[in-house]
Image (tube, rainbow, N blue to C red; front, top):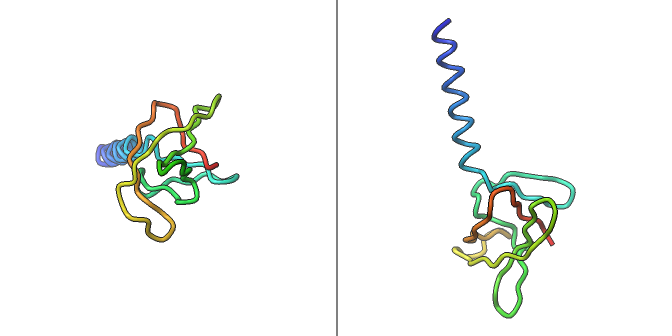
Length: 95
């Protein structure tokens, strides 16, 4: 019985750790939502390019704002790693 409880608490701890690591990795694509493997990886089609600078649309559920991002890798298979900072409860939207 104690062993089962320890296993359950260990599993809950792992789930909480994984959730905290992916706090901002929830992306909306069309009508479907998915979690990225790397929370800094986005589809190239989501990037907005203006005057040689890169942006993403970010929503907090009430309003959408454009956030500047920096590419941190080469584009591969339609995805690129970026560097961005979000406030809590904000999520990245496609254009």
